[in-house]
Length: 150
Image 1 (spheres, rainbow, N blue to C red):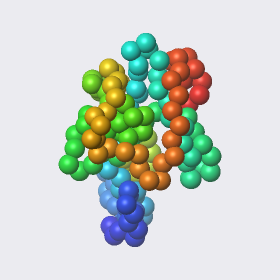
Image 2 (image 1 turned 60 degrees about the horizontal axis):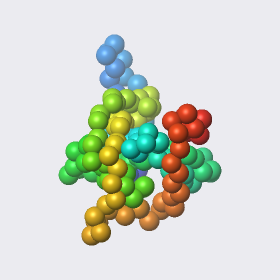
Image 3 (image 1 turned 45 degrees about the vertical axis):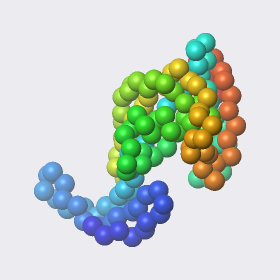
Image 4 (image 1 turned 120 degrees about the vertical axis):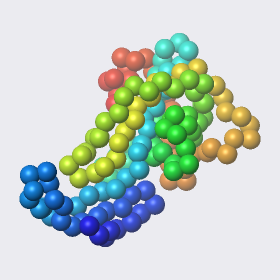
């Protein structure tokens, strides 16, 4: 396998890979660090959604906070950081709900899901701010509305 592209977020490898049946196949694999998906729930049960532009599909989407896990942090810490960066609230509790590989046919990214509760304002001196390429709007909605919006 050889790396044919590297970006800030992922890399792409191509080459031959031996499968369990013994045959070799030409493959392209996107290498991506694990990611977290945080479902922020306010004390009254409402869900905090974010709306942002997604260049790959050329439109805005309603989503929940999500992002890559940095090498030096745990998935739980990443879920808290993403909430702070994207909704300006810090969950005091994060509960792991499960994990999945959304596109295992070509990408090794694992997405780890968390319920994020006891949301509080961040410390005034917190270093966590939205990424420069993110222009995010937030909205607190009922769970039923959240299901319809995402």
